[in-house]
Length: 450
Image 1 (cartoon, rainbow, N blue to C red):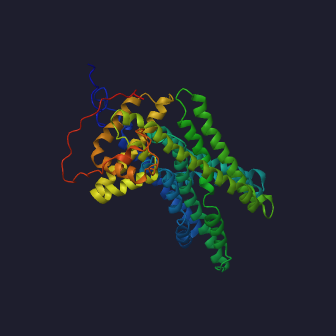
Image 2: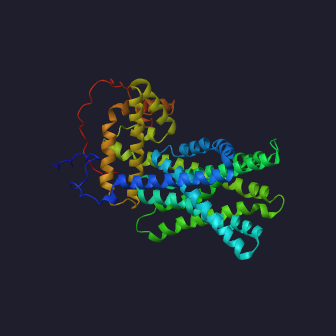
Image 3: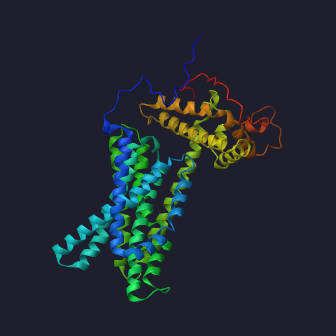
């Protein structure tokens, strides 16, 4: 009789024995400290520059108005990422990079380029137009795309597809727009203070309407094109080097082109801005929104397709692939666990859902030949995490499966398994919170079973 492979290795123990000590500059805490220092210094410098240009009162007014769309935009991108949510640290880094580093790069580079053009051509008005339509789109989109590139390179495990690219790019652009709106709104408020106009038709009100009400999605829309390029590259095999390089560059060029058209709309005549907004920006926003939602639904389909193999091997209960492929069922499972087992049980179920989703995506990439060399190690890690949380998760998932299972057919099935397995499952008995978890007995491990 063939012996079963050993159980999955816990994540904290590297395969093949202990690793050699890395150089001090390769340590994780050194990288975090360097990145935090860079973003902090950038934030302090950008704060000083914006406050110098707007004044203290203008800065406070701009800050209060610019922050209004931020929670809505971040919540929208977080909702889009609910199938396989990335860690919050990636979103915090992206927002901080956009608000601090990218904004500082843009302000310094745009000012230098505009002054150089004005000096070379002796035409300040032409320099401002050229800087807004040519220089600014190139500099700003490249600065924002740098955050997507950094996550793509150094957080590769968290960057697996189009949705990840859209979310990272969108949050980065949200941070950039936040800082830029402080500058524009604060400057507009200073102009109104000098002219004495503080009514509905003031410069501040007009700037707020255009930048916050009409087009809060403008910067995210541009940068998302670069994020889609990185997302498609992430789904490509490692051997497709040309594809993995050209797709992000193509997305970045499209982002620059759309940004240039948006900035140059004011030069198209009296109604050029509204024409570009209605005929180009709104349809593009609708198309990219549809693409993002469709991609999210496709991810749920991947979960339903890939996880049955692990259910057949005994790692998952039979109804779990159905539950994990439905956002409604997943929410019901978390609510059930929280109600019966407390917040710790609800958190365990949420982690179980996240690990199972990552496992489905990993297997999907492996079947298509796009998994990395650490496929087997990563699969064992995910299976270990699932098995450690099965006690609180399985009753909740079984309840969600029964609650969302299709209604039974009025016609007899004559023994054929047409009904969902959860329809015949007995009511689960949720384990007591204080009862000790039994020692895990792993099922036979066979990653090639399909």
